Length: 607
Image 1 (cartoon, helix red, strand yellow):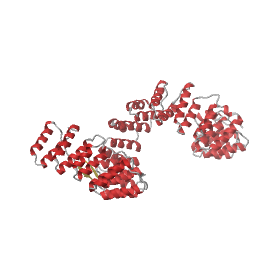
Image 2: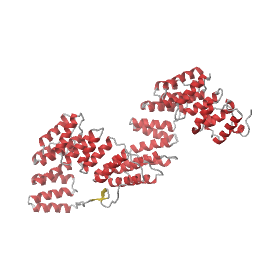
Image 3: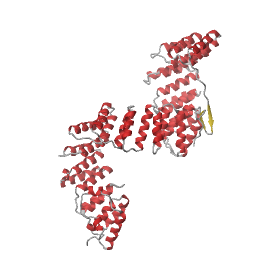
Image 4: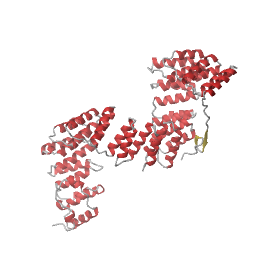
């Protein structure tokens, strides 16, 4: 029976290629249902030739795949095109393995498939990482002679690459008599996925020698390989290649270029790529924000942020982290409040960043509110969030809460131990800090430079000079940690607090590195406390050479003279500061509003 109009005009039962059928716009599902109903009424729904257009239309609509499956079960002896319709649709579904079962059923019906069949079977094997089935289908391809088909071989290369068998992927590639760009890209993508970055660059060189021009897919993989290898020269070459060969910059290549330019600090080149992209996604905007933030240009980063058509948690977090990295902690806190008002749920990176801001600003109430939010809203708290909480509580003077967080952490690293030890030390719990350090060693956690800073501070606060000096010596002898300036400063503080100013001065003179202003200022402060005018003058002279514009140096020396009743020298020192036009910094204070402590002039609350 001939199909009644308009069905005969809308649906053709001719077996044209699947690739062309896939690119056609599917006919209205309503029209398909009308045709299906017509075939049921005329009892032609079991005829493969008549029902084929209905199957094709249903399989082109992901929401009607189950309908297609039902129609398929009612067909008497499905034809190869019908099996191909089903295999293609199932291979693209959320259950791609069903297409392999369909292939087995096709074989059971005495049909062996064609080039279109195997293209989608290999895609399925790649998606489901079913190497065994893919190798079996490869044997079928060899027997049927389809390996000479370009698209089939390309699908094979891609499948083997996804499954991690680069040897077979390269073997198929090498045996091809004819290759196109897809062949090269399929092999390059396989090597890239398996982190064989040098091989990626080697293939790109061979590709250029073969006069095959790369596209956006090629260049994304080449740029990523160059970046992973840390080969800036290769990155530069790839960037020039893109420009010289007019490679179309799609959203993925554009994002990769923006990211790499941002990492190398070439933020204006990144902005140039961003501006010329015809299509951008949220990753493009976020990457541009991170590039500006990393370069310290927070004004431009905020402009990008404010211009975004849509923001996600990464957008907010990138901006907040950027403010923190540039010590703009009050801006970070205010932006976090805006984020909460916009009802965007923070992630672990967001809360770790804003907790760092709270620590620097002393915002204990806000830190507690964030801690409550983490627990109440199931924010994934890993070791980094735990460490940020410990740091915040310690810097805000709430050592008990810090220790509570430490005890509750399921996983701890050396930073966790160091943060608590340092927090205990600076808050006057020296004995507890020493005990925790010993426990850390018993549990096999290797101390870091920061750990020894905490230990030296603890010894300085508790007056345990000999133990502190012993730990300082063990840094190098036992733990192979070369002391840094901060450790030398801690030893000077250790000796100075005990009243051994001469010992501190001798230690400074024997330092293997040139002491900085902090070391000399520690000595000068101790001289003021102990009334040692002679050493105070030595330290002050060094400070005036190294940091002549710091008013604190003059004030300390003047106070030392005053403490020794050398008022003329005290007045002269003050006059030196005035004659040198040394600015005296104004004081600042903090206030608490509602639940949040903020710098004066900033009124807000945590939503």
